[in-house]
Amino acid sequence: MKKIIALAVALPMVLTVTAQKIALQNTILWRVSGNGLTENSFIYLTGKSCDESLKLDVNSKSALNSVKAITVEYDLYGSKDAGKLAKGNIAFADSQKIKNNLTSGQITAFENKLKDAGYPAQALPQLQAYKLNMIYYMLSSVAGACGTETQPLAYEVDLRLLAKKNNKEFAVLQSIDEFLAESAKMDNYYWKKNISYLLDNEDKVKAQYKLEADLYKTRELTALQKLYNNSQLFIQLYKTDLQKQHVFFLAERIEQALKTGPGFFSIQFSNTVYSDFSVFEILAAKGYTITPVLN
Image (cartoon, rainbow, N blue to C red; front, side, top):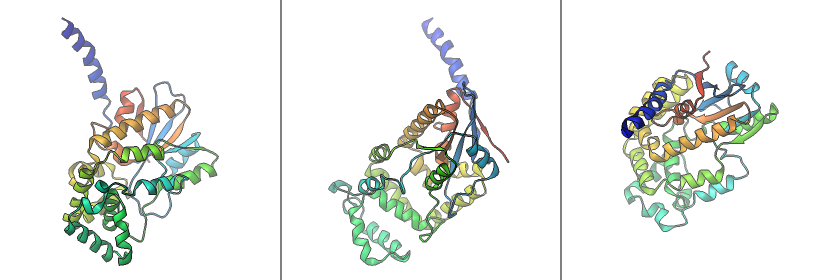
């Protein structure tokens, strides 16, 4: 009897969560309402962009003007804690060093790719001081749609300036210390696996990075979600327990901020991709209504 009662109690909860699945649509702006909120908040999904500056559409500008705070996922570049980020990428322990994790063939292949991309040969030995994550980021930059001469748009920089210009509060969901602590949990095996994929699948990687950027630029989020769910490149990078923990962390921080007043939250598209851990679905399960803002 107790089991039957427990099942009867649990079943409505399961049905409620299942009923609140959020299907992605082709827009990067989403409204958060309900659950006692008196004013709407908004979630703005960022992605790979080679544009030099942030270009908000009419709906996004209106949303930004209607809130009291602009909040980004994290602020790594141009912040007062940028030095912490740089230090956090240095391999102080032998177990973290490149020479002790990659084969000589992989190191040579990595250095050759950088040389081909225009990196000076005399700078390459300095890379031995970095952790594996830096090797991954440099390889992905070389293969990325923006190339090595154009840096992908750092949304937090422009949003910080917009907050100041429009007299809005500016905040971050994850501090630099929290970001580094989370990054430290990504072990060498994770990075070696991802680095190996980049080195072994050069043409495929370039094509997938280009497709990723093109789909985001044209706001084809449903196709972009399909890419993330079917490409080994993105599955290895994002469909992990650590990413799942990050998504739940973000949802909790967003909910805390929602209680203080209407906000404009900028988070990466990858936090909404996988149905078993999506910021949208976590917030919906908590009682919030998440709806697309369509042009």
